[in-house]
Image (cartoon, rainbow over all chains, first blue to last red; front, side):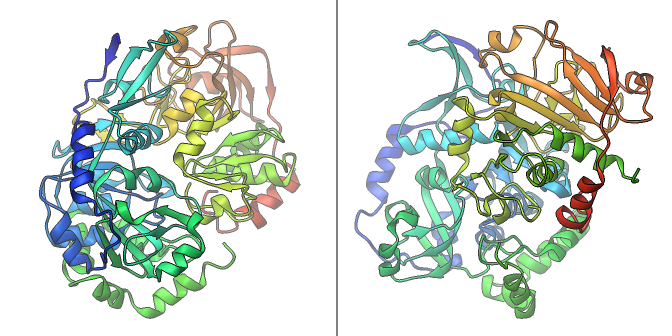
Length: 323
Length: 254
């Protein structure tokens, strides 16, 4: 196949389909085993310094916030990140645990650009390679398919392509130009779901973003769940199982695990908390104070929820209404 | 005539561009409000698509992001990124609505950096879904809230999302699908389209009281001007009522 153009962006995680196959075969239990554990144990066992890490979410929705805070508390460093993210990436960057970022979008939607991302990248501390949203998801899809790359019709002709690690080739079947995206298998994925059983069968309500693809592209996968349910409940609606047990290494019970973000049908996002954080994030000292209070200052997610307060959490639940 | 803000004018103008019974990829902000307004007025059967998987929502409450539960409220499908992005790639999605920090005369957009690539002077969010929408939707409409010569520039600091790239034939030469690309630009001064031959941005309409010269003065590149620049229609009393009382009562976006 004739390579016509190559992006100059650094490839932070090289595709290795055979290595991924071997890993899956050796490490993913084919039997259903109990994987319920605390977030401390999950992060201690499954997140290492230098890991390539991904979080799955849409904006502030269904973010694995309790897990991200635990990664920071345990000080895992030299992380490489897949950057479709927002609050969790802001916190990891602010804690100075990140070396590289495959970035598609890191910002606060209606509230604007991330000041923490600005400081991290403009200072030259964090290196970046560019991708589109579909491209990074299709990279996960390629890894989940067990193949080395996937062709697409995005990114071509742009600086997004030039600063990516994609290649444009002449397709051997049609002769048309097509953009090849290298498969992206994560060392560790963090996903928050509505419900899971102790084996890691997970159900997500509403849209599923890129959870399906990322779960299947993760060597190690830590799940946090609003609710731990009996397997019978999973079996009653198996069509809702986006992530089956064999993809999962750890299951952590984390009610309000997406706080200060929201969970579709379950609780609304904590606007007041987020607005305060966004104001504070403009100032490095205040950002550090936020981390001290909400991440380092609590031992675990339970303590975090006590700090936020039951009254506030009840209010967020009541705001959900019909939608 | 009722008083209205320039943002209300932009929202109404964007809504007018959404056709009933068609599909539109909408992002956070003005496109959402425009989609809600269009569904309440001339386009009740507008199918709005959100990039995290909501298709065909009935937008009764303003979403605050492209993935919250309102983006698939009473929708016909709630899937994921791949499903909707692949729908655009195989040619299903008619309109794509985008914003940017910079736009050039071929409708190329920058949402990545100001200054050099790395380390940049200002790091912006990145492409998100914009590059995919710009590559694969049939007609791309850019919403630009600030029409100044720093935004409508000769040369982008970074070409995040493809418009017509360097001109006629450039998209096809780069490998992008033929016969699609930029269609309209809605700014705070007026409405632009693209010249069929040269693919260059062309002023079509201005808002009441805005002379053509003001648009040209606030554009760094040479803007083409249609032979008959009209005055864009102002928001109607009903549209303003919907916007203020129903769609965005908290003034999140206005």
